[in-house]
Image (cartoon, rainbow, N blue to C red; front, side, top):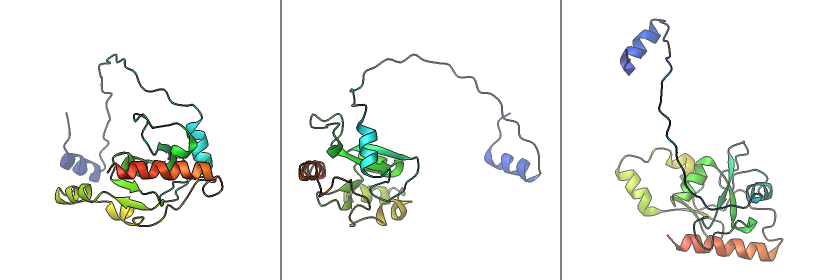
Length: 166
């Protein structure tokens, strides 16, 4: 018997034990290809950012190395200058081009996408995930930033390139 949310609430409020059953699922075999990535990219990027999200500063085990210029783009290098350490929320927002970072390392947002999200009632969490950081410099920059002019210039060019794609 499948319980709907109301039945479940009534049973839980009454202190009844709800038994979870195993679900059988068929397995499918899948094959495919993906672009080869450099093994050390993530370690190098996370180290440069002190394992902190560049946008919000979070330093938990949810920090990931994001490519500024995506892997699938011909200019999408696995070099440290093409990386940002981002928490999973900011990584997803960055990859979906909702949260943007311009060449001055300032957090921006895609206005058209925000308008669509607002119009369709999917704007919840904006203030916590984007609004609080919008128009502010990244909270965390890589250790090489402004110390190694070559890497800094490459990163700034990558940020500009990606931002201009919007």
